Image (cartoon, rainbow, N blue to C red; front, top):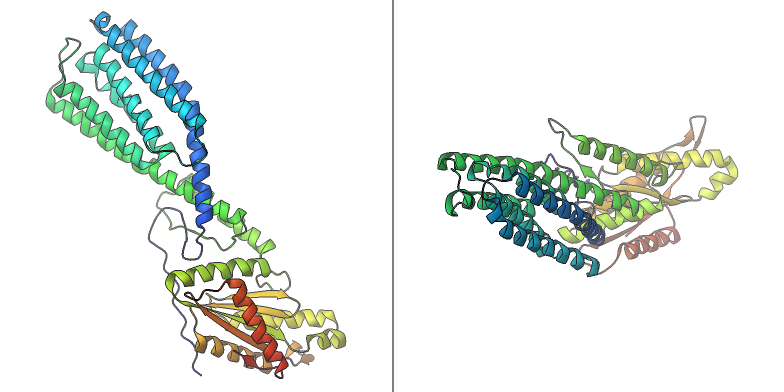
Length: 423
């Protein structure tokens, strides 16, 4: 038979951000848990920020009344009304968060708070200051944009920036002045608004990207915590890597070291049973999404007990190490070689049909039969029995059933005379 064609390695997507490679890992239940924890963090942010809002509105009120422009007496009533309405909205949002069940926050809740923030800020500047200093509200608005993006994402940040610009332009160009002072020219107002929009766009892009990458890093950590050691963080070298990129590299290096310690069989360097199960589930999910195939090859060393009994366990360990080396050399980079225990091994062949799986198994059987195990001065001949099982992504079975089918084929190969492939 001809050798099966090796599928090309999947290309990484060209992105400078960190992202969990979902070609090999897809965990919707963990993503849901991540959304839940993120919603809880947003709840906590709303609750602690309420005290900042209360203090901020109090300080702004004092500044407006003590240092405002002429006409502040007339501004007292509308300023107090705006202040009272703002405190009422913050109080309502806080009560809503405290009484609501756990879950993702309704998007209107943080939007209502941002609207109230910008509304009360605009009211203070409109009622207590002249048009020539209205541009200062954009500085405070930029802080609101930053916090909105950092805690709630790009969407709310864009909304905060657009609403701030709209309020500023309305006060400068549309609404009649409450404080009778001269306004700046329309061209300067437009330039100020454009400058704020550009700065806000940079802030939204930088902090929005940071937040998205942080979420991916959190998902990666949750996957590793759950034992999914096949999760990968794909990174493309950035011209100016930030601390989050360096942190991600540290986490991935730690994961690799962790996988070496608990996901690898110490004798042969193959994956152990738990790591095999994780990898097989990942390959199986990928096959279901692509409607492709996954083959499982079960391998057992024939009469291995006789090697241990006649040559000793050190020789038996050497034979297992050499057998693992043959399997790794025969397998592709995309395949998985694992040791279940004793002299039983499993090779997972993703994107492989019957012909390719049987060809691989026969090539492996022949290489083992031709190999002189042990040392040069005390070579040991050995053979393997191999069972092959295959499933399509559309088949209604589980990875556990696929492993069981490969074990059944292995049993038939052994009872059929050993040193053979059964599929």
